[in-house]
Image (cartoon, rainbow, N blue to C red; front, top):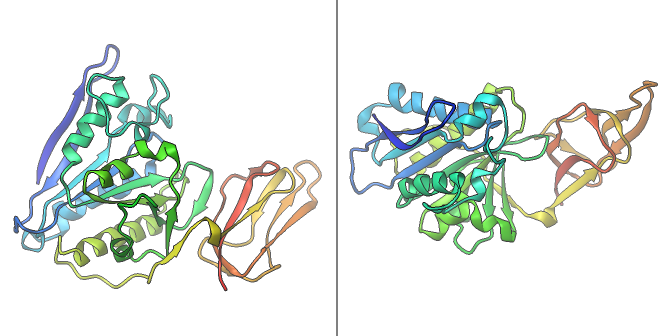
Length: 310
């Protein structure tokens, strides 16, 4: 293992921002290479945990002869935000994942993105561990833009239940996934629940999926059980259930559970009087992919997302 310094930015009032990566050199120079990026935001605790435990896996649990291609893991980029529990870059509240491919003479976050991207450019595969931006408890899944550069067949090697094949918005052209793909890397975003508590069961699912992908892509020789035959979903196959009232939200189903049309899947309790003022009914047959993770819900907030079946 080689610990490499990717960037160093001096600070007037804090320790320098030093972003480091862990490079594990493979035994076969012709094997594919992969880079894995962890927390780009200050509230991305599960992505940070997954990336750091992958470092431990390659450092302490995988024999060197089983590592065929190079593996680079960058567990964290936005240390300043992580240290104070702030989501975006603390100095100007900008999103690092909206700054790629970066600009070396630009704002601080543009310069950070430029240095990061220079190191990541040239890898065969790229994995970005992302936290959902909304308050939602969800199944881990692959997010893949309809960019013209995406590789759906490769995405299925992870073995997640779902792949969200998402229509691109204009703002998505400055994300790491799109720019990585634009420059020839097959990049994938793994979407993690927005909960700040580490769920080791979910973390294990994510890390096993990454290891499964690397084995199937001939980067490592480490066979584990097969995952799911991933179902590709888009906006037309996801039913969104919004809240009709404000109050205390109680979900009766968990992500991954299958539900039937008109089944009661949750309720809202009056926050002062304690009676049930609204019940959520499943609008279709399908599988719960995520639900609202806060106990207090507002009117018109997205309470559930259901992948339609049939």
